[in-house]
Length: 251
Image (cartoon, rainbow, N blue to C red; front, side, top):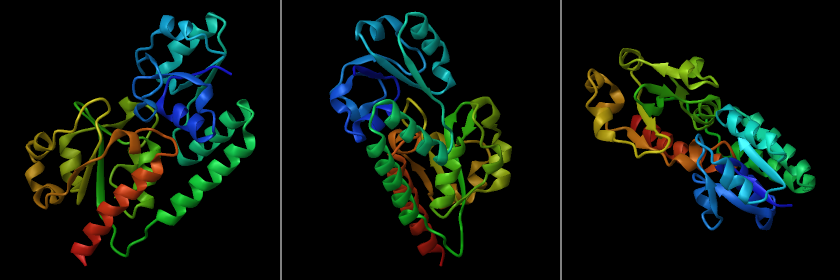
């Protein structure tokens, strides 16, 4: 089967299911699968490039790609649209993609392994730091549901857990809200561009935040936290390391 994966999540799952040879092209953000031809961006898809890859299946992710999926379907190309937002949703997508590819057994093993690794890395300290995660800087956008879950597993408390939602516009926060919540750790991963820690530190009022005063502003690689697939294990590991170091200094 000739597969085009238009998200890093889909590409990674296919590779881990043993379907690497079937993947003929990927999107620009599938950095771990860089050896494959890139036929499209993520939010701005190139329908003609995808069609030229002659796929038998295109795998998309998120409602951001709904228009692209519709265009491909109108061209007669089968599309599997994944749209998960939680850890349980990641598991469901692994199993669904495995069944579609005829690799159901491999998908069950991958899903089980993913869960075991998350459980093994889960940390429950007596003192939990208040954590602010920033997905974008202007406007300030906080994390999607799976990020809030990962922070909790890592031993932190997401200060905006109640704001965690599917749509980015539902996750916009103001400077005053962050200052009032006074996070002890700031995590940032800006989709598509490097994090400017200096600009975060220089925001009006942020000098009063405990995390800023203590130098607890950390950039996370997008591929380990913004891509909702098996790579989240690495995200949990990295956030857990940051939290454990904070707990050690606070004891």
